[in-house]
Image (tube, rainbow, N blue to C red; front, top):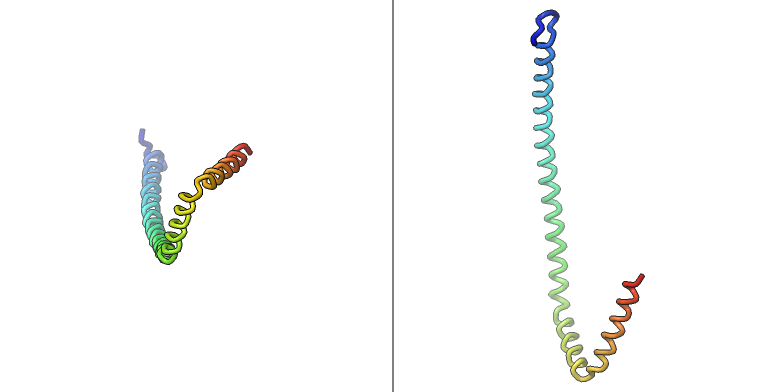
Length: 102
């Protein structure tokens, strides 16, 4: 079905193909720009996360002696007073049950 009078169908098809080609080029440019922006965003996020991890690791490293000392103290107290541990667990269990009912 091709019309030759006044351009007709063939000129529409050609025009449509040119527009599609132009849109494909624009889409390609936009895709490249999005990849670049995404790459920069990823790099910035990775750097921020790395800084946060380093900060947390440093703080944890500084706190470890205190945490170990408190853990040894808690273990010693639990061995010396098992009834106190059971009572504490019961209180925590009741509090958790009360919160879950809401």
